[in-house]
Length: 283
Image (cartoon, rainbow, N blue to C red; front, side):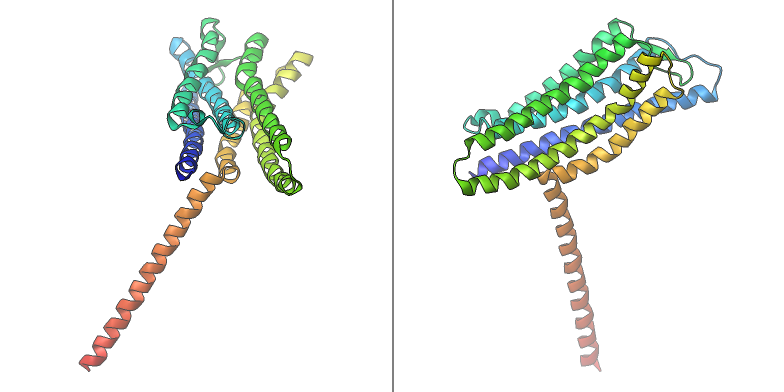
């Protein structure tokens, strides 16, 4: 039993670390795009178009896709733990190592058609390649693969888990405990989904406005990047509060720091007392 709990704890931390890794990698790709934007403005007029520009645009979309599917993996892990708890092989550490590799491979494959279809177009105002909002087909496809599909999967899995837990409970006492637990879980899921939805609101809003009015609002790409950047800052903090294992790690580290500081203070006080006693004896 202890081995099982330890294994589950390690998998939970592994999947959270995978999400943090996608965030860090995504930040680096956005930083690289920002450097090119700055370089273009400093050396204006200049063109940074070309195949390398398309590859630079490809990588942020891959990271963004991997970011959302990392939460799908977390939902699948909880699904296995609750529904298929008897099948221990589905809760093995190496299974989710393989799942993370598959997640990254799929993220590269989902975005790769946009390279073949030349959807990454050079934007002369920000000296980078992006999928243009005027490319309705490209925007809809990337929104479907990066945003709508993973969010739908996450919503379906967590809804099924909650219904399954309620369906399998028999006694009134268990129902009361389950109600409290479901309330906590549901609150965490709602918080998680709200932040995940927040990432795509700006893109969808700009797309809807352009589709209806045929007018692309100024600074559309800048608005998109700013909203994503805010989400990338907020998400790691949110993960700490909605993932108990991560929160416990931080709390344990704080306790270790406090205990070590207390130990140092005691040692310092003991040393001072010893010195005073030595001085008194010498006197």
